[in-house]
Image (tube, rainbow, N blue to C red):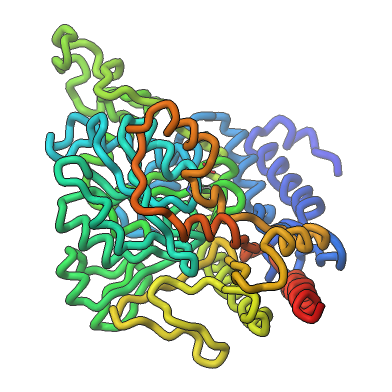
Length: 506
Ligand SMILES: Cc1ncc(COP(=O)(O)O)c(C=O)c1O
């Protein structure tokens, strides 16, 4: 195609042409990355790789990234501002702050709780304790150590992959425990009713690591919800007049997202800190994200407070520029505007992505149901059992979870005729993406072994963590991401069924 001289001299026409070509290019080269349900997606070739996760996008995301790159604002700007507002509106939280990763989001969330701007009895100080779970991802926990607090590890249930809430009280130390910070494992909400009741009883912060759980929800009877301070559903959710249903990430004080490609939506590298209710926490979290500054002007704007040269803070002279006044020992963890532009398009796809993950989990569960002798499948928190006719049956708490699964968790049962590693090797031989439940029992990771050796007082363990060990030894997960087609899922099912039956017969 040739560009006419007239359009070459008109920047608006030139931009339009660049974006048209960008879309055309993307349609040609990115066909394997389109959502599985998209007609133009390139079919999967039998015998080729089945990733456990990956970016799923069309020319819309690529156009948004290029358009924003042509603007060349580079740091966080109008796309970032819009994405923050759209994400907060989707979740129904007061604010969402974009950051450059889920790990950064966790670092900011816990740092915010150390701020001297918080009441003295609530503020996390050096040596204070934060209760967390031993089985999971390392950067749910590392930030606790990085701010000088002490992670207190409790065990996880090998079936749900989530915290054993019955250990919360045992972990608590009056005057020391200030917060609970833990993840909804693989898109399975942890027992929020029990955790919130515990936090309410002891006046503790709750940080939900929602990195693997965007689009998961938790519901409870209205009376129970009201006793915990909740009366409203999240936007777009409804579980009947007698119940309150909310997205995970909207029950605690702060929650975090990862937008790294395997997650529910992506902006490349990226993440968010969601401030559920408290405006003060937003100002503090933003300060930690943006160099620790006291000023809250967006980039490129001055004097939002109308007293830029009228403050007196710390031991600075009165009138010292508020823009260069630092009330926290902060970081700079902002992403770029072109990333936010990608995230905005992805957010529009989120409802479709949430559903695809649920359906893919169901397909795998159904397809592997003959293997229950050897394999233990995950159950959502509060579910007692699954069957193909009725779906899940629920426990007597009245609480329910609705999982948009990050992964399909499988544990190899103790009496099985093969090991988890043998199953993983068989999946690898067949190019089927599989992962361990991240760090397994984190306490056994070299970084934490070293920490304990260097500074035994830097962490505390409740009980023996036998179930976290079990997760470490017996568990893996397959993908559920929205790029998996029916053929790919069926191929996974066939390989696992053949392997398990072969092992049992042999
Ligand atoms: C539970 C959990 N928290 C935090 C993170 C860190 O996110 P990121 O990779 O964006 O730093 C991950 C990463 O997958 C995660 O699974």
